[in-house]
Length: 100
Image (tube, rainbow, N blue to C red; front, side, top):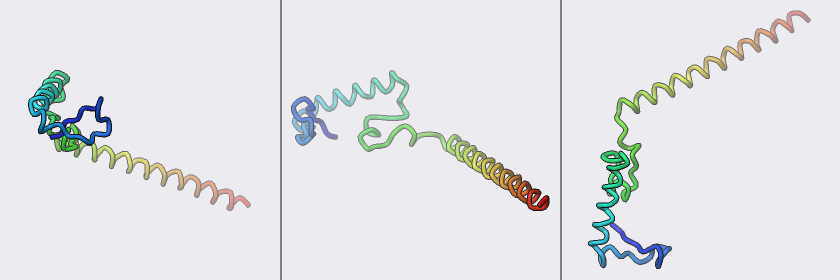
């Protein structure tokens, strides 16, 4: 874990975690408390945040499968509509050519 004083070190060059382990522990506990209070826990923890993992990583597989299925259905519907539109254009052009 890393700890920086952004008031004195806005570029985050001096890691204070080893110098102030109690402050790091306090901030970590505060984060965990806030995560629970705002219904982020157990979806995201301080360690997840530090590792770059966000709550979307923890969506249940059934939900991800449903999202994929809905996306596939939307694409299929769009492709089908595109072919129907092309068919109408083709029929229109064919009828115009036949009329001439």
